[in-house]
Length: 200
Length: 231
Image (cartoon, rainbow over all chains, first blue to last red; front, side, top):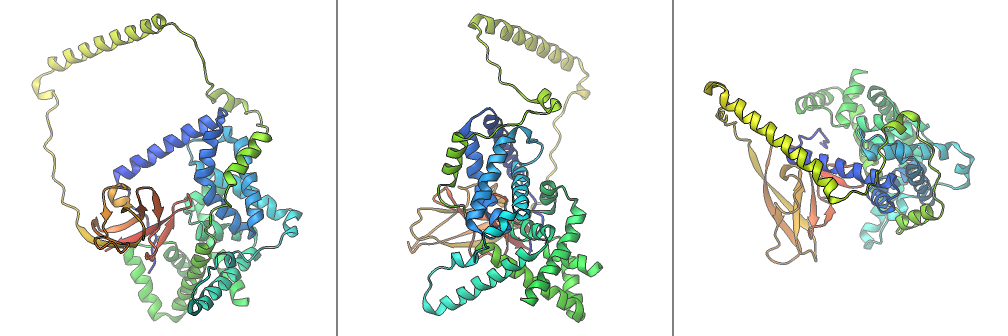
């Protein structure tokens, strides 16, 4: 049975984390002072996770890239407001999530359809495996379409918890929603997603 | 409602092993519970596949385009609220001669020396039984470690190491070997009981997830740690 339980961290891992946080604070300070290289380091470190978030929220690659650019631009403008007591990744998640929410509420959303996101990664395989991969890609597209039909709060918890793999505490810091409420929401969101998948 | 919460905790990996076993035992005897659990497991599997297929980096050159755009059209930074402005550090530039620097440094060194001497005098004035004595170190029970075999196919790699929380994420400590040069790297590491996160490191710098692991956890930076559980 799969398990992602809480890990006991070794002292060296904790030291490594503290060091990483210190480097992160320094990068933010340098970026706030106008050091573009420092901001670029921040972008390169976080772009992958945040692009995946945008792609999973909106289901369209070019729109995801635009939203990611918008998120980083806002982050650059508001970097002074970042509180180093929190992780930078959590703060960036919050900025990106707000950008995605604004997009999903706007008329702009209807101008671009969602793509077959999963189909884009189907690779050419020997003939005896091609059908299996295609079926898998189609199944993933069905899941993706079902997620797109969820109300925004349910979609967010599915994307953040089940696709991005964040902990409830991290999601709470990024969204401002208490952990207990998030857990209840996860139960309801998954139930609703199952209904949509059964119906499709 | 209780069962729904238990199933959620099971799916989210929050149950202790004893609680998991209890839930699975009950699910085996209770068709309704069993069905609900099975449905959640199938959904989790489907979401895992979706996650794997949408885990891709942004298009090449994204950072370059973004930085060019920021350089061409720098966004306006809103003024800080007064309470943040008060706490915001400001860079200070000063021009001082070497003599002006040496004077305060010398004064500080003198104060530190005097304080040290006073401290030493206090320690030696204390009765011997109040001075610090070495405390005999208690020997704790040794942690049980079990050998775990790691395998990675990495044709063309010069070196492969396994890095995880069990070795402080060192990229050098636990290396795998390819004795027959067929690109299959193998090694055994002794690891204590419990759950552990790890990744492989190819040529000292390329981090890859273990493709043969059954459990993963995103680390929040776009990488997936494999999760190993040793009971």
